[in-house]
Image (cartoon, rainbow, N blue to C red; front, top):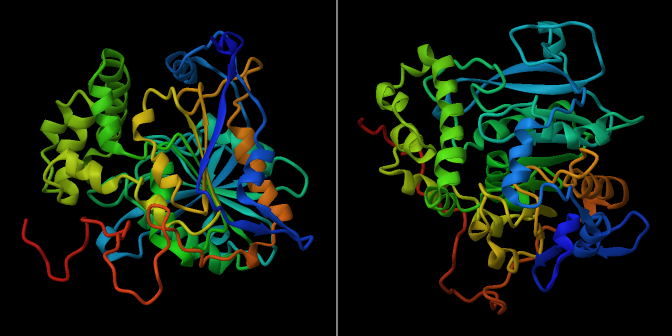
Length: 435
């Protein structure tokens, strides 16, 4: 019997396609994507007192560790008429002494002239980050990854795309966001490509933000502007996760209720704007107790889904994984009580040569606390990103490698049934629909 868990020693495993891509190095050699992932992943040694996923996850609430990251905020107006409204992006900057009580700690707005003139011709790597459900740029798990990248000499640049209404941002329309809300991220990445044309852009997503990031990468496919991406604690299969939460007391009465409470707090903050959405009965929303009830009353009516199950199936990112065409690392603890193991798309990882899944036997949800208070997941995440930025010839990575169908090759020029992982049900109709 393996008792290494008593010492906090988690088992680390890698799941991937048989024929992974090899990445061209700046030295002229090539290195397997798997070898790169393995080389940047240290042994997973966690706090032995936090010996299961629940204890690790609970620690995210009680652990009080500060990592001083400073931001300047720019407010964007959505350029897609289907998703009108404003959203906030926080850019990492050098330390300053100003304060703004209306924003999270160490966050202030850019002055109008500063925001208008943002841009540079430098070639620093830049990280585009998405937070978890109802979180924001202030989240400590996010800063654990940013700190070793940006707080060093000649470090990276970074920004955090806040979901609408999160991180004390204001909204100007009657909608919040959902697990498929890739439109704001897409606009920001395109804007960065224009304002910082020489910077290689990388993606990072946590929890719900990991699901959105994965969906975005799948939507963009071989045309993706991001050079590579890392996701942590992605829920992947939202319906499987929802049903798992409902099956246990901790799942329903602790995790689901807490997430529902956090989302209802957002609703209360933005009640005036959200009340303009005629599809939603906000009194029914305020009476919800669990996450799936909130999604039933908000996400369903807002986006036209008949049930929360239909929304979960359409917004899940497990199929989007198959369409990714940039180097992609997913980090996941198999004892995660929120992004549950049964939702992990192991078989899909075996079909995409651009993707590697790193699982640990312990770690919880966005946790992986070590004895000194550090979070283990930050090490493989930053190691992967640094390795690609420093050593890989990013412009020479092929994006034309086609996945196989269940391990068998598909003959070119032959018309056969095919699966389109990005053929979603949610769409904007060519003609106006009647409410």
